[in-house]
Image 1 (cartoon, rainbow, N blue to C red):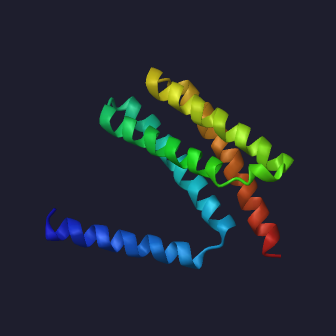
Image 2: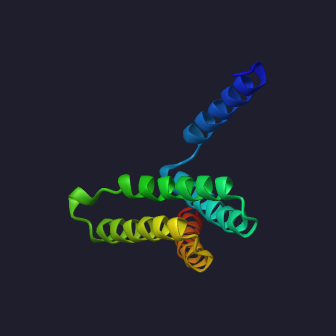
Length: 131
């Protein structure tokens, strides 16, 4: 790894740590939805441009985010909302994997819409929390 690459990586890690320390868990979840939406949009664009490497990387990263969101839910407490979100995130991750494998732009658009609706719900919740 070159000095430049090492410096860029160190900067990115420091910036990520700063974000984790300065944001509430709810804000971090909203940021993850922002990133997942961006990645699905990017994968759609990469597919249209036949950039298969970027397409697969974007899809896999989006899947990782959705599965991470599912992992942090407190489903063991029997909370109905957590259970529902767990099922929703599982469905989105499975659909995203299927769309990735079949290179289905229509399915990716539907997945983007679902993620964007969840992102908007978090945005609404955060704005009401700040009032």
